[in-house]
Amino acid sequence: MTSLTPGLALSALDLLRLLHRNALTASGLLSGLKRVGGMPSAEALSLSQTLNWLEVDRDGVLHPTPSGQRACSQSDYRLALRQVLLDYADIVAPDWLQNATYGRSRVLAFAGLGIAQILVEAEVATGTSDDVVEFWDVLASLARGYRDDRLLAIGRRGERLTLAHEEARTGASPKWVALDSNQDGYDVLSVKTADDPAPLSIEVKTSTVGTTGSMYITRKEWDQALDSPNHAFHLWNLKASSPQLAVVEVAEMARHMPGDAGAGDWREVRVPFGTFTSLFSAVPL
Image (cartoon, rainbow, N blue to C red; front, side, top):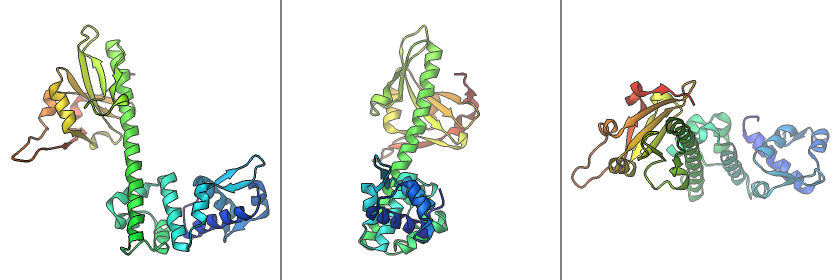
């Protein structure tokens, strides 16, 4: 898709208004109208489809979806551009979106000229009025949701690898505890060995940036590790050409855990994957 610019955004909005008034198919639109709002109609159509602004009836006629109607019915230019940006961030999840959790200046610095210009013309690049603050709060909320979804997907990959590894190691099918509940303080329940069916709880941590990444261990996860007779941490390095696993025992991880002091108690600790570089090895699956 062509990079988002103010011109393309307005062209897509003009297309929605056109389709609200006229019954057109995609082929009819492209053959009969080369440009919409000063931009190629194909680009306006592509953006509208990407943002889920259009639907097609049984006769092939294009109609604005409810989200498309919401975008093109905004009362003024600024509000319309704001809605375009929010829909674009929600559907496309562009790389610059992650900066929204750090504030407006980070987005303006890293989003690129087209997005920055839209922010300026939408009158949210400066100012502290309630509507401007609300826009940035919504954008940050989308960014946090996208980040959480991405981290969950990465974590699930590691959990699946642990399930496969444990079944191959023990011959028994482990239980995917984290899939049913994330309140237990560990992710997978396996057994010690093929000959010893004693329960083994496993906390899985996964990195897609190799050993330069970090894991976060919560107090609940650490308390579970201390309370379990048999517990291990599985660290997966997914940056390597084939997955690499480090199995870290509780005693080894304990060297990197903080302690409470005075009236304070810790809730989460960051531990670099690189701390356990020597323990990583490729795992045949």
